[in-house]
Length: 102
Image (cartoon, rainbow, N blue to C red; front, top):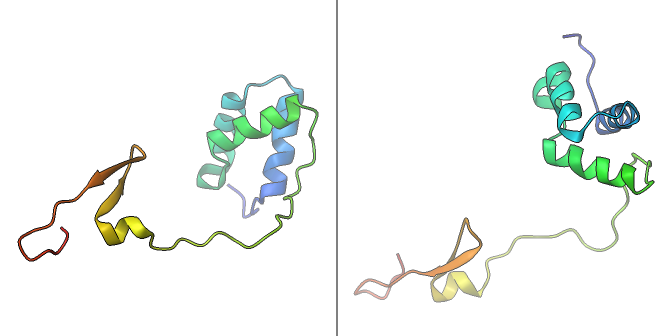
């Protein structure tokens, strides 16, 4: 591979090229991975961009977002013993005899 560094805009422009060639998002992703390896967009991103193209949106620039950036904070769940688990459900963690949560 050459020393060329890809950027998001370049990869998105390639997606437009693949879209115009009637490739699927999955095929476009495969081709990006073949050419750029770990620097390629995720398959999910490819699908999202293809959906935008199907809706007539071909602007590949990042859009500015208004408002404050999201910040992760400890919520009330960590105080009362609820814990987030992978399937987006909550599990209550029982306390031991010293009233410390496990």
